[in-house]
Amino acid sequence: MNGNSETIQGGVAGKAGTSRRALFQGALMAAGIAHGQERSLPKQTGTEPAPAARRAPATVPPQPVVETAAGKVRGYCLNGVYAFKGIPFGAPTGGALRFQRPAKPAPWPGIRSSVHYGHICPSGDYWSDPQDNAPHSDEDAYLLYRTYWTPAGEDCLRLNVWTPGLAASTRKRPVLVFMHGGGFSGGSGHDLLAYDGENLAHRNDVVVVTHNHRLNVFGYLNLAEIGGERFASSANVGMLDLVAALEWVRDNISTFGGDPGNVTIFGQSGGGGKVSALMAMPEAKGLFQRAAIQSWPFQRLPLPAESGSLAAGVLAELNLGKSQVAQICDVPIGRLIEASQAALRKVPRPAADGRWTGWGPTVDGKILPTDPVDPAAPVISPQVPLLVGTTLNEFVSGLDNAEVETLTGGQLADRARQRWGSAGKDIVEAYRREYPKATPFRLWAAISTASVRQSTATHAEHRAAAGAAPVYQYIFGWQTPVLDGRPGTFHACDIAFVFDNVDRCVRQTGGVPAALALSTQTSRAWVNFARHGNPDHAGLPHWPAYEATRRSTMFLDSPCFVKGDPEGAGLRLIRQSSGPRGTP
Image (tube, rainbow, N blue to C red; front, top):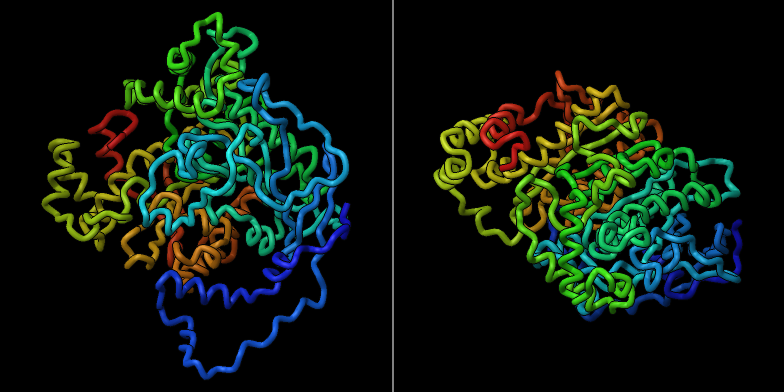
């Protein structure tokens, strides 16, 4: 239900009245972008009149109250979108509930304030120092607006909702549920500015959900063999958290104006891996109707022996024997993270069989019956259309990388020869024909993405061969003008476009007209896919479904275009020279 129980505090109301154009101009100046599309602001001379007094808005936006299965929550309204943040979709996961299946949140009395993000899962240095689980360069943090200020804790099963209208509306909107990146070890549903769902909800009349869940040792410690029945699900509780989030959507989203029968899950990088795993989980079947996987290399996931060995290593670091395994629930968070990191450092990398190393879901034959990338595995969700793709340069970018200017053609040839022997020359030439205007560095960046490009195509072909629902493939190829254009199409650069947040993330995109136009085209494709199971729309060239004979792929660029079998010759040469996975 919608209620106006309280007025918004002054700071929020002030933001509601702020000019989007003024914010945009200020951000452009801060980013050092000058492309001529925005007039420069006048210099201060000291003779200008004093600014006019601030005026209070004529009406104060309401703070809506909505009733969920566990109790009432109060959000806020800004720019025509209702936002609710930090809503519990599960109980706290510490103490006796550590390494257990997620439990329902306890009902709360009264109205719960839900205007700020909830806790994130403790992850590496997140617990002792606000940093990501992996080091990031200065330029990377600048472009992606990385944030590290949210407290971490085991009460991390929280989600966030953005919606243009509540249950009083007769319209039931498609629901898009985002799985954040960071592998299976780090990150959160709000650690990048690009994840903000306001624009996507407002401009496309959809409901957007992001969330946090258990990661790393908290989500994927396989104690099943060591600890017995009590810990039978411990290897996959992080994935079961995602199932719980989708169950919350099923049970509550109609109150927020969403259609529980039209849910799309989408994720980037590790979030794409989560989508892939959910598609292979019987407990998740029926909780979503579409799926989109962005920039996931479709690596094989750990088997019980591998994840069990890592768990044994953690117990050894904690000096806990098999008879003492239950005591792990009382180990302080910081000590548990320290032990898990020490054990992880002793895991051989890369894995001899090419499987995902470290924390991640275990193919246990029950919760996750088969590996999602196994071509012989049955398709658990055959009726779910799939949107899948990569950025042009996933693994090599110009961020804090001097080679963007210095790498020569001779050095590129030497690298290719060292990696692929006599086939190296032919591989470089194949990519040169594909991208005739690319510099040696840009060619190397494209070649270095071959493994994820190949695995993406292989997965699409597997689903097509299985007679599953249609698959649509893309390559995101737009290059930002920011930082002199050096970054290229780096890992995660597509997220701001999918969320239609190019005008928010001007440090990343420059906010130039080409970026704004592509943001509309891209976000509309994801929304059309969520609404109809097909990303095609009038603002794009016709986007055909992927099939093995044509391999039709949409290039999201300026302009957008469709190409059959992109990089095909080079990918086939790399695969022949590197084995079935084609790993460069």
